[in-house]
Amino acid sequence: MTAAYDKLAQYGFRVHGAIDGASHFVVYMKVALNKKVGTIYSAYKSAVDRFGHPLLIRSDYATEHSLVRKNLEMARPNVNCFRTGASVHNQV
Image 1: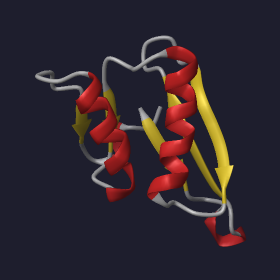
Image 2: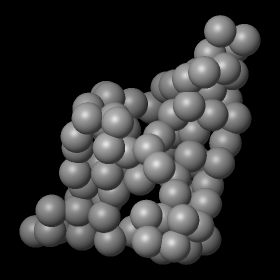
Image 3: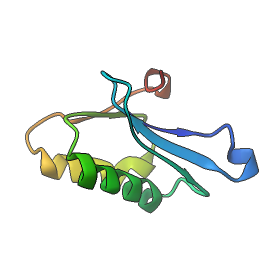
């Protein structure tokens, strides 16, 4: 699951994170000043370099996850590995 915590956006901070849904292990957590594609992808890429590609990612419909989706679909072709849904289902 990937998510951005926007409660601190009014102060100029965005918190991006990915959590393993089964174990609740925090795969990555990053504080940034924006929600740009490159910012999210760099956090994802560092997690992939450390832990390998995930089997599945669930995200909301936001376009800032487009590079993450492309990368995962290239790594796992012919598998439904990136699912989107309402953001309320992405948060624990």
